[in-house]
Image (cartoon, rainbow, N blue to C red):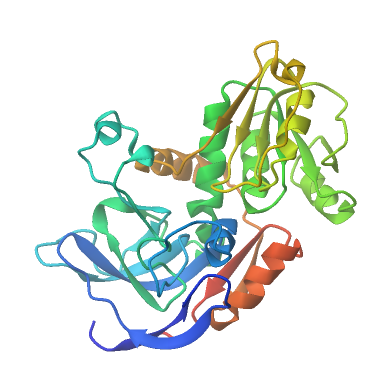
Length: 335
């Protein structure tokens, strides 16, 4: 695996990614080397690029929704097999020995590594990963369709799980995570109420096409009280709004890694045993469970493919809300 490759590199926050020829990584013991087939574009990548998440490892290759083929094994490794398709998500490694890891809560690990943040990710032709933190993926599936499942799907699933039992589910921010979660919920007979940016009639129509029973502006009132509200838009002002939409005993779950400040709101909005929760990362168990369920349910990913070197364009389309579904980068030249 010696030689070079092309990658989109973040030199410093607040600047566009740079198309560079860089050294091709070699897998160390316990790692595998991958030829990247596709890498999803996540809002977390925007938070890293904008400097809203502190202390990324620089220079950095972003990207944590990676689909690839195993092409090399670190010393002493025998699995997974060369040529096998696997996926890499946000949690790149956990320490395995802190109190959280010992409690099977590795998403809260005290010394983790995160793909595309504190270790290089998949905006590249090749990457390496800890072999314990990859997921086997179907060999015949479209890699562009698989990529968003590895974060948008996984974090959506964990957000739903933390909300608890629910029949009527509100989703604020109808992007990559929401469009997958909407299908997942409706496949289980749950009702989805979609909230979009005010005036986004296309987004509301998209939500209804995926099974939402109602769709409206984020400041609108749905026709019923919600059991839970899941927030994927990084807008703190949505939290008080969502609290007013859930029933007594209802839960609001914030699914993003970063959010603007939550404004003050009256205690009456929280009273009657309503609650607010946040989601931090995910576990490998989340990944195994969700991927099996999603593939069995036949969830359809709506993804727009971009050449790898067009990553800045994809990120701006995500930022501006021009996307329906997800954006995925595809290396066009495999070295």
